[in-house]
Structure formats: structure tokens, C-alpha cells
Length: 491
Image (cartoon, rainbow, N blue to C red):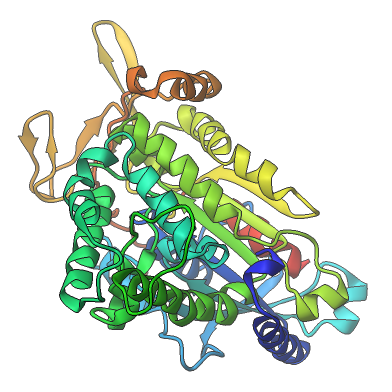
């Protein structure tokens, strides 16, 4: 985050937090891993599967420390931040493994510590390293991350940007009711609580309509309007953008002044504490992306996802940490952008999903610059819910995926009961995504996206060993993600 977005006091508090973390790390080496993504990208599933595979000796051939046998023990330990809710791993893994349902999605911040005992691969490191690494996994909604750019915007800029975006594409239809109320609002009139509530409610309804499964739009700040939590109904969440003149200040006691004050309160009460207490303390970050859902919803959803990812990645302070910067201005030195639900495609299309996702974040990577940071893109499935097969039709052999659709899932007019398996042709992604984005930029409304069958499959039924012990959750490239995110700290 550029220095202009934080005050001297904020920077001092951040430096104090980092000093405390580093001091604790001398005794117990720790890495803070941020896990985020926009709604339905699979954050809860990713964390649950990662922890389950580490605890239960999962198949992790590309995670070198486990594959070479250097990890001797893995255990969950109490998290260091007592004021942060614990990530309820046990509940989530029970839903996945025993009930075979997908766990509830992330609605607030949570944390979990998992500790690995290991033997360093270097004889020199064994002399100085305790052979122990704690990973503090910090789970938070991607919608909160989209709020960070608000720290650099005053109320006039926020209002102008939000109103301009609301008038484009499908948003123009979804925002019609809210914009009508905004158009008729007398911003110089005395502040009125009921008017403020009406504007805020209409604005929140517009954001929720954009987020719905039918639209799957992604750029939707302020994030707490969608996930209010215990702030629901508070003045800090009872404001909305207004149509403002290019110059001038809000008359004292006016509706404009009320909205401006509450917008600033939102930044002070909601955004700054999240930035200082959590985001600024991260060492590594994974951003989960449901690119298939966006493709399935059309050109505007793809463009909006690209816009959101650009805003998300622009929040990071990437770069290698020197000793001094690690103490006062901690940087995120590795960022993984992971396209989820790779098990919804045949493996022949996984490289295409990676290429498409890499193109989605290309501008963002150029904007923030590498500056020593490692930024990687890969296609993963935290939990593999399907297997691959082939079918012959009209003399042609087609690759398909086989799985158990969720109860009441409808495919080609057929309703499934949650028990019966079926084979689905997943569709094809373009071999080179550049033509797709070039076409979207020239005339997105006329672009025909590739057809991808996004089916909601149940989590898999786990096999058991001869002694009745269930094996770990199957995945696709979860081990590769682990190796990138923290494998170097186990060297």
C-alpha cells in the first residue's frame, strides 16, 4: 500500500506489530499466510484441504520437504491472536469428509496455526535452525481487500467512480432503482436519517444484485455492505455515494456532510484496522480465483473480474524483505494467484485455464511491478470432486469428467438426487486467451465466450485403507501450491 494511504500513527503501529512478530519469530519461526479470494472462490475448502493433507500424510509429491521425508511431525497449535476467531477446521473437514457437503463460505476473518517439525536439507542450517516452522493461516474475504483502495479516495472521488461504473453495461439495469433515488436526493438539504437509510439500502441492494450467481460481478466495494457482520445497521454502514458537484464543500449539517462523515468513519472504523492489524502483517499470499464461473456468466463478468483482480493485486507491497524492511515495512514476497475448480475441466485444459488466469492478472502484475516479488499463477483443485474418463460418440472419443452432482442440480433438464454419478463434457477453453481479451476490449457485447459446463459436484467419497483409515482429501496441484508458498522456509 503506498505510504500516502496511511498516517504516521498508522505506520508506527504497523512497525510495532512487525517488531513484536519478529521477536516472537526468533523463538518460534513463523510465516503468516494470507488466504483470500472473491465469493465462492473456495477459500474455506483450500485451507481445510491443505491442513487435512498435512495432518494425514496426503499425496504431496511436489512438496519437497514431505516427499523427501524431512517433515517428522505436523500438528495444530493455538493461534497467536486471541482476539481473532479461530478457523473452524474440524467443522469444515467434517462437512467435506463425513457429510460430503461443501462447508460454509468465509464471512469474516479467521486464523489457524499449523506447525511442522522438520530436518533441514542443509547441514549448516541444522546448526542454527530449531527445525520447526509455524504457519499462521489468515483467512479473510476478498471483498475486504477491495476496500483498501478506498483509503486513497475522498468521498467525492469514491462517489464519482462508483456512479460512473454503475452506469455501464448490465450494471445500468441493476442500479436503476438506486440511481433514481440518488438523482432525486437534495444533497444540500438538512441531514435526514431516514433518507440516509433509504439511500444506503438501495445501494446495498444494487451491490447484492451485482454479486448474485446470475451476474457474478466482482468489483463491489465497500465490502462490508455485502458482509456487514456486527456492524449491520451502524452509521459507518449507513451511507451511499452521491451525485456531487466538481467543486465546493458540503454545507454544514447537510445530507452531503452526513454521508461524507460516515464514509470517512467507514475507512477509520473498518478499513484501517483491517489493514494495520492483519493485512500489513502478511508474509505470503494466495488469491483464489473462480475464472470458470466468470466465463460461464459472460463477457462483462470476465472484464469485471479482471478489474477486481487489478484492484486486489494493487494493494500488495510486493518485494524481497531486507532485515530493516522486514521489521518496519513488511513486504509480501510471494503471491500465488490460483484458478480454482480445475477438476471441472479435463487435464488437457488445465494449462489453458492457467494461461487465461495469467492474462487476467497481467495488467495488475505490470502495475505493481515485480520488485523482487515472486508472483505465480496455477490451476488447482483444493478438493478433487471428479475423475476423468472418455466416451465415444458418433465415432469420436471425447474427454469427460465423472462425478456426483449435488442434490437438485440440473443438467440438460435432468434433476439429480445427490447420489447418482454422471459423466459431463466440460467444454473447451481457448488455447490462446489473448484473442479473447482483445475481442472483449474492442466490443465485449459481441464476444461469444467458450461454453464451459460448471456443475456443482459433491465432495468425493474417500477411500479407506485395509485397516479402515480414510485417506487424505484428493486434490490437484495443492502440493505445488504449498511448495511455492512456504516450501523454501523448510529448506
